[in-house]
Image: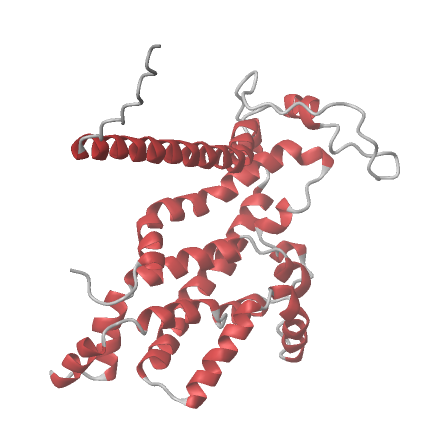
Length: 319
């Protein structure tokens, strides 16, 4: 009888070969992980950018083409009410013929839109500038001097920051009415200038500045104003730019404040118009929305580096 072959043990892999296979397996896993994350990020980026691209491209369409593609969305009956949409809306990214008629109307034939644009600038500009001034001074006080009372006040700042504006809208209205500020720009400016958001952001940033730097400045004879102006402000440049960008975008898109605190439509910013699109102004809405996005996009693109640096940088001295 033939003997059954014996099972020979598998020879052990060379340690270097085993490490090479393990490294290749890890590399394939890392590549697949990065590829999947890239696909997911690209998908969300396309979804988020699609409305912006649609708005910009549609602003170059003629009014007749816009009505043919989207007129059913804004259709109304004889009484001004909305009607049932039985047609399929045609989302069109590339116009049949490029037309600048919408921009011609907005920029030259209808100055009311430019007036509302400058209303937005007048309302938002002072809020950004003076909120940063007030916030930087208050943050320096919170960061330099600790105490129970200051911690309680800072905690109150955090509580106010967590509240949405709709919660404080009624108290703001009552205080503005008591101060006779309704229907004036001060009703918008004062609550915005003393908003707690920038104070919270800059305080957390200034508290990470090493105490040794401030003590060295005091030993060299620097006063509080010199420490604030020549040390804290330069070190907090990224945080200040980040706060400026975020505050500008927040108040540039405000709608509730002007509607509640200003009864005169002539004082309303452009953001209020964009929330009231009429059936006969669909094309103008696309053009106005494109113009309205330009300041935010320019500020973001210019300050993107500062924004990232101010959010990720943990304070202190860079090497």
